[in-house]
Amino acid sequence: MAVVAVAASLNLAAPRADAAVRDTVVRETSRPADAVELARQVHERQQSLSSLFRRADARDRALVGRKAVLAQYGYHGDPAEVVAVLPLASYSVSAGFGLTGPLWEAEHGGQDFGSYVGDQIVAVAAGVVTEIAYAGPYGLRTIVTLPDGTEVWYCHQDDVSVYTGQAVDVADPIGTVGSTGNSTGPHLHLEVRPAAGSPIDPMDWLRASGLAP
Image (cartoon, rainbow, N blue to C red; front, side, top):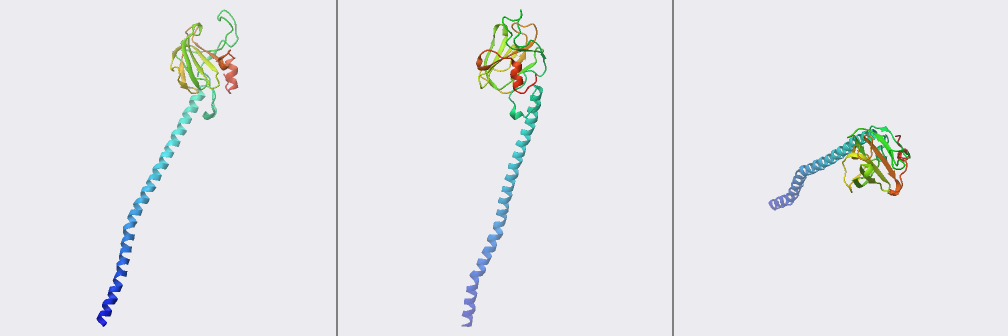
């Protein structure tokens, strides 16, 4: 009877020992898997943060570059708030709006900016290129229509760097200064026509946009 009691005692204890061993094995084997998963999550988060930092840095560098470009064309504020810029980085103001005389068939409908052949002309405001053509006394002319219907004419160009239907942003290249059409020398003739109607003084329009031509 004593032997049976001892045996029974041993048989009852065995399952508890086996369960404890199994629990220990499960804990020991699961720890490396948990560590691997945690390491993977940390790595993914680090990569995500690095990507965010790279994009932020690229955005900041782009803004610095954009600000420098806009400054060349007379705008020194926040690039995100730019409405208009000057059409040339370097120029001399010549014939103004409303002048009359033998050089024009009627009143001078725009503002002339004296410059050099090949100097880059940029869009003074964002819009869509609606016409590129030789236009008699205006020479090679590009018309950009703004969202409010205002037409901006860039005349006497030597070359064009846009196409009809193209959307252009503020300070995007339009073409280059020339002396085509009725011109006594290389210059840009700029016209501003609200609602595609009669021209207004471009200098007033530029000043109203916060510029100082």
